Image (tube, rainbow, N blue to C red):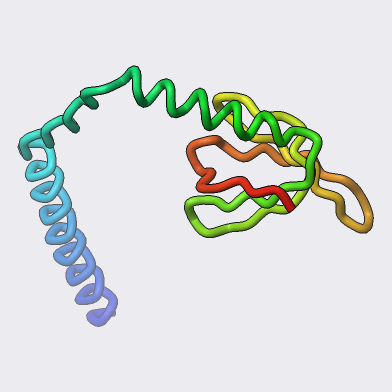
Length: 114
């Protein structure tokens, strides 16, 4: 019985110490200064023009078999069925069925014809 009582007291003391550490960490995070905002891009027109040219280039590949490489170095091979400003849609043919797979445009590193 004494052992159980000693273990209970130990657990209460350890739990209180852990919660004090958690509270201190939360207070530290709440009082930390905000990070400065990223600097604005100077030439937004040039960026928009480059994005439009990239969209036009990829749009010319619609209906063709392509390999799409992502920024995480993944490679998806299939038929490009749609290319919008926000996403690319591939038709990936598997032995049992066909999949329509959408890749966010921000994740795409390169699109090459196969």
